[in-house]
Length: 168
Image 1 (cartoon, helix red, strand yellow):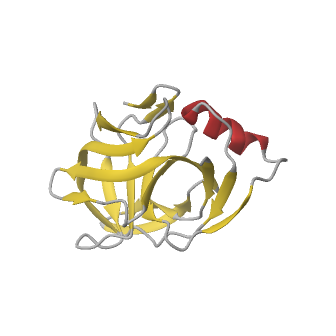
Image 2 (cartoon, rainbow, N blue to C red; image 1 turned 90 degrees about the vertical axis):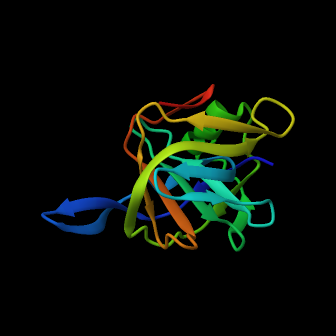
């Protein structure tokens, strides 16, 4: 099942010693697969299939990766006029999406270290399998709640999404 996501969240902006979340993420992001594990410098999170946490990304340069639960996401048929979203999905997943999800993620308020690697499950090259991506330049991890996060943002580093997968 192919899909892309629409969501609105805020990016981190520094103001002296204060941190606030203020810059909007792109409205449309591409579904990369089901999040399985995120290993950080200070925390590690794992999700099973029942948790249903999605890994999504903006397909623009200097992208971020976002992980959040999609239990209550509203599903609808693909809007045929949204060619950019379909092209973004196809570039990574090598097929056209068949639906889209609308969801709103909570705000990521706290930086909790840097990401060492991410494990996700995808059927981008055929049967469903797990992929491990070790970050070359560790990006920062932001969460809404470090003990039981509902939303994680992985920003910075040198993340790129290509037809080969996550790079950087």
